[in-house]
Image: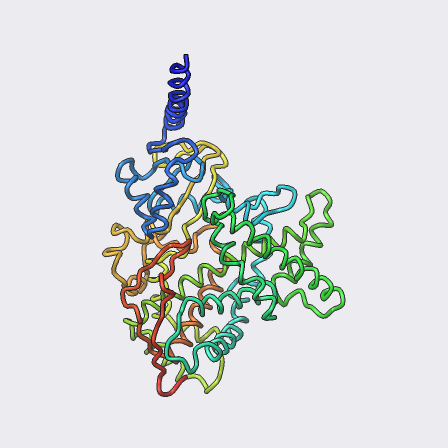
Length: 475
């Protein structure tokens, strides 16, 4: 009897898993491999993510199953629509056949009140952004970006022979994002936000296992601390708006408070709380900081070998009166510099892509994607694919001359209705950085073959230490 019980207790879990696995993998007609229940293929997905070979996850399966394949990651049935045709389909059918979806890790980090969905609420947030992030608004930030960066260089680089690029870039891009979004300059407030920020951002794309010591758990705790700080800033800003010492047009937070208060007068909808606003602003900080920070760091890695950027920026500097800050017309002249930045974005996409959910059954590539299925696009798949970019491992800014890459192959900022609303802001900040660095310094990498890790976004493992070589006459 004991032996029978032992055998039963051993075999029952195995049989159960086998049955679940069979059911799980046979349910869909979409070709693919779905792995084990719950886990799916998440282990391989995250392994390739950490190693910086995200595109291989899609390429290997596309070779086996074709341009449309199914898998299971993050506990969800998920379809990949490969190539520019898949990208075009997803971008052009936003809010028609598909809509934005985020993993549970995002819902936990950017937590809303009363179990509101971050996904459902994101459209309301995007409606508030155009006055601050479209090209006509970004024009007004350029001189401020330039001034802030000059001061940062003076404080942290001037007089030094060697610097570590990553911490400096992070400090500058974060301070600028906080100023634009929250209107905060105070060093103490900045520090309260900056210390937990990295862990909160890291939790966004972590495996959502909320036990002490995990990246996700640390991210959840850090996001709570950040929201508490932002809640305090919101409370003070309300007082400033009430007594006239703050202007709604000065920054996004002030604008958001005024607009949300108007919206909350409509009692037919659930009110947006201050806690909701703090979560929205945290999400915007993460989105606005990560892309720019990652791109600027890798531009610094690549620029050593591309003197044409120096020539272009020097010509712009010579045409300006001494000490005059950059303006929109200056940035429009930086065509080659932006080609270099785009090639960095191609080789090192600063995000893992994005997710969608099918609003209804639809057909693509001869296969039916069921309602409720999740979809995932990887910019890495087309941008590091020899079918669309010959010799994709070669750094070649000339790819972006003339008409540039084929449509829907270069998608670092997404596309369609969900095109990143901050792409013009990112472009301006990147070019302002390139101008100031290139016109002041040459530099040498102290670790020429420094490895890159994905943790959770691409970064040089040693922080990119460089030797600074100031120009004899600074611009």
